[in-house]
Image (cartoon, rainbow, N blue to C red; front, top):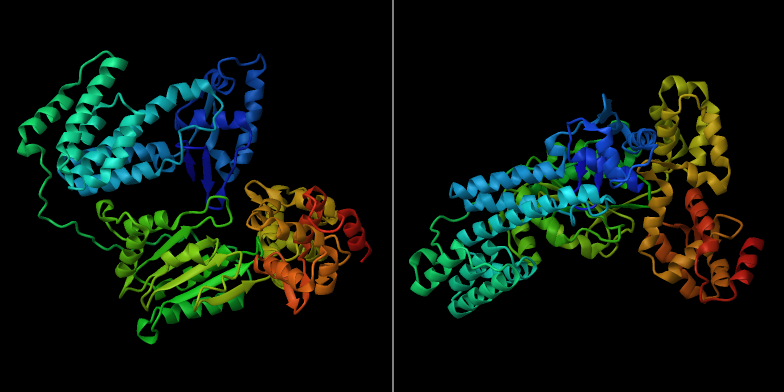
Length: 611
């Protein structure tokens, strides 16, 4: 598990993020997290949740909130225990970002005192990387925020000052100037930051600017706080005036060394992975061959694409685990978040890869191109696997690809990335009926599966063979022992509510489909929803052109974009098919889409429904 308050509230388990949408439940969880491992009295929690004004029914309502929070946390809900007079959340220090931050800060301080600025800078950077925004930013409790945000912000500034001190000790003063000017403007009361800015300017040969900064901070302190500069600032000022050798940039004779390590960042394999035997064998075989660098002149690049929810990530991780021995020098993994509004930047991913490979933080280059060059140099002559999950497009992954033989990269993406030269394509459709049924049987167990064989087949068909939908159905039945498989089949039979049924915790078919549509331009998105109103799941080119009011060539380009995005299946030239659940999603959204800039949408819809 991973819990976080250094930014928006974060709860993550092996299956992904677990959102806590209810505001008061977020406040409750945050209050338990800041005192993890301790019994927090119910009245203290009530004060936090209701911001100092708890209602008379607070005790009863709090129990209900705790019950709902346990459900939201999934399996981790059992960590939330009811104790005499209060509640306790069991979480290890390494699972909580604020505790990891404190540990890394203390390590950095100890190493800086020990004269090891490289290691100190690395730990400070790791500590700062845990921050995803202002602490407790989405917690609607002034009681909690007032008690914690100031302390956490002060700790972050302490780390920024420590990191700056370490970087100054490494002789990298010029790269600090811009950041220090911003920090002193934002925190004019932090005398240590002003002293560091003066030192960086002096070491950069800008003595007059350093002295001008001293005059500036003296005025700021006098006007805003009514005090004179402290001893540290006065010492730096005097040192500059005397050209004190102790203030000069350090001469470092020892080079910063990179000691290569063997990372293994791949998420755990799924014990219930089912089907896709041909695809697994294909990828595992190619990975094994790629590990024999002598037999290849270039690294293996494979792109696994398919509709949202098709199990791309699960397949890649399963194949990577199966072929682990072919890449003994390690496996790097990154979730690129390409289907989200803010994808992971290649610059940041490269930084994390270099740190994982043993590069000291002080030696990580500042530019993306330089990071790519160092990354590829470190992988040259090695046999490593790089897994890049959920890429947005080819440009997103190019800086992250290895260049030397013996290495391999597995990429998942909604689109096929056809412009990624030399990549081996693997496209995933729905699971075949027998594999979908086998998957459900593994999730439900032999006794329950054998009791309703026909209903099991019908449930697999109702899910359209979509692995995500199958997993949700299996999990729902497992959590409802009193339900029969037939009961869930009947609930899914109504197209209008099918997608409502396919939601469990962080697993949500509708949300995955919505994310898949976010990257579409407006005309293509409108076409996706409008064409689903046709009476059959298959749309021909002529029909699409008539419904969209576009020439056939332009309509075909729209259809091809939808096929590239995994939202339509190109069965043959000129004919495209909606998978069942995608069609249900497109149809339920069609009445709510903005009217397209085509012929009257009412006439178009009537034509669609009439065939």
